Amino acid sequence: MGESVPPRRISVHQALGGGLVADVLLWKKWSGGVLLLTSTAASWFLFERAGYNLLSFVANVLLLLVVILFLWAKSASLLNRPLPPLPDMEISEASVVKAADALHAWINRVLSIARDIAIGRNWKLFLQVAFCLWLVSYIGSFFNFLTLVYIGVVLSLSVPVVYDKYQDHIDEKLLVANRVIQTQYRKIDDSILKKIPLRSNKEKKVQ
Image (cartoon, helix red, strand yellow):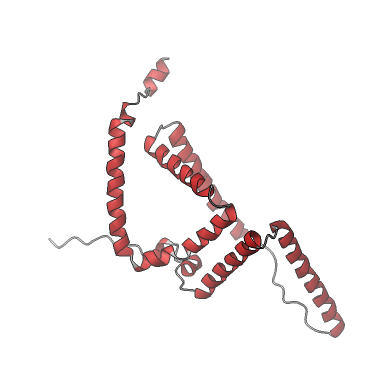
């Protein structure tokens, strides 16, 4: 018998979808990464440090853009110059359907988790969701929403690159951490969760 072939590891680029988003997050298209990081940093500075209001800033930018395009078009018609090169501003039906399908799958996933917690009484899932929500609430008490978005963009442009470069070493550490977490959960499950009395479906029907 031949030696067993180890399972093929999925690359970080494939795990991120393998498209334009993966290229930007892994800095394969460095221009996209620089544009995303620069625009996010500029937005954070304008609204956090400079004190601009988001609604008034967007309105002023759109007003300036409309005035420029209007004057450009008027001057072009008077001087026989070409009109502003504007693309067709419309959203394709395929893009709307794709976004709706993604939103539909995400909502169904959330509802499925809620059903498992409320009806299935999945203690493991309940503890995971409760811990994640508590962690988000705890982190949110230190930063506002815009700062969290900026931190998320910075992490999304740095963590995948670091993981792609040191994937073997990080996987080893994560495996050890996962074993420790599983061991602690089994202890909690044996000492606390399994001692909680739960009525079976047959008992409910009898009542």
